[in-house]
Image 1 (cartoon, rainbow, N blue to C red):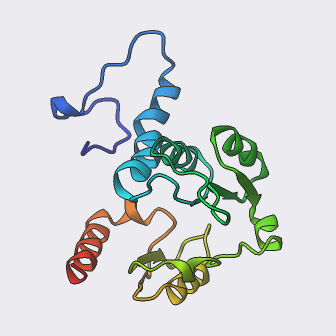
Image 2 (image 1 turned 90 degrees about the horizontal axis):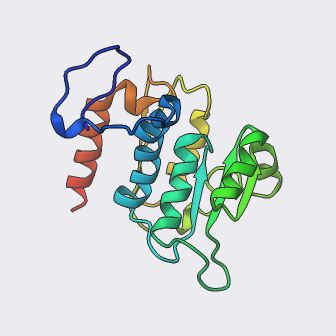
Length: 189
């Protein structure tokens, strides 16, 4: 859509405008305009999730819940003896039940995920596709060690640590992220 702003007024292209029917709460519509497009859009259009795929969603806020919904929409689900649809993990226990309600088969708090053996990187050795792991050194939500562990366990992965980057690195440095992703994909095609 090409627009991300906190402003009373904005000049935008016509195709970026969606009329909201009267009577719908603006706060709820903000969730659709941001989280649903990001989370569900990532699952449906970007991730390559398909019918029968297993999915793990880490972070069960509005974007994470939308990723669960989007994954379900494209048919992710049980396939064979060892596959399951969704593992949802979040630091806040209050986010676990909503994830279960929208389709995650198993949900874990961050602490219980560790107890269950779902620490960062478990299962990553099964990933066969090259992966680009970009992480902010100043991320106060996810430790840099988790990104390093993930990159270490995935063959042909590339780890990029941004020294001043935080948890929202894609919003903090979109041009850099876009450039790194493009370079990564071009070197592997």
